[in-house]
Image: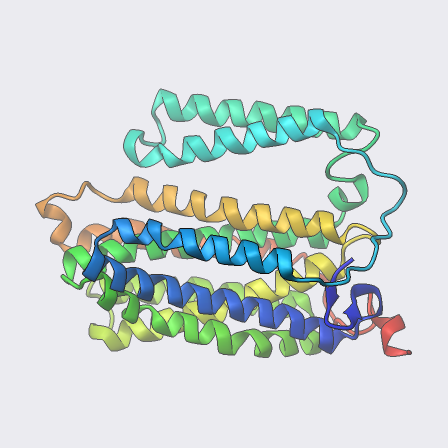
Length: 355
């Protein structure tokens, strides 16, 4: 069961639940800004090693804070007793491990290499085995009620392709800003700041739009904004659009607003439309999609980029990469159209509104 302050998911009003999702999305936006800026300062003054060392005291501080924190959590009312499916866990972990390892090697070996094709085939076989096992297992990791949920599946796919396209673009533009424009790490982080600002400001707006216009229309707008922002970024950085910082700021701002809308819509839809008792399961699946999407997007972007030679300093070498990513983001329109229409109020939260 999800809890936000005094509000549990089963008794939470739409506005309170939307506020929790918006706050979480805004926190992600703040961290997205803090990372590049702090990283730029550390690299510029203390070397790249400092980026890794600074995580040690932060992790220890968070661990101490977590141990000291006492938060009452309501008991989960899952549908029936649950046991850990070790076979399913091994198959799922193996499929994801092979997939991530294969995708991380695409920039070095290419999509058509035997190593890549073999890795993708092994991941596909492991995934198929996982699916067959889940269908027969008494206590599957992904319960049948979750697997059959169209809103949950559509949200996962939309988040995966949108996140992949955005992180692939951030990967490519980082090289452009530093290798083509000659900016240092700190200046590059400042150039991306509008994306974070619009993520923070756009999250509560997206939450209100979701409750008023429904998941389908809100998601379509969010995916369209992400795709349009990536197209604008491609035109700006390759010289076909408005040049200079202003053009990049506008494109990054649109990207932040669009991705905040996608994040809020998928989060509220995944948890709000989850079968009763399985909010934790779908939350874990959503987090998995958020982790796999960037790996896939960066693999796509890196495989299309040339080696960092003298030719890389020509801005137009990024044209193939930045031209593909808007199309990848646009694929999210298909699952977005499968999300429920109508207002959020009246579905899972109807009982809360009457209390």
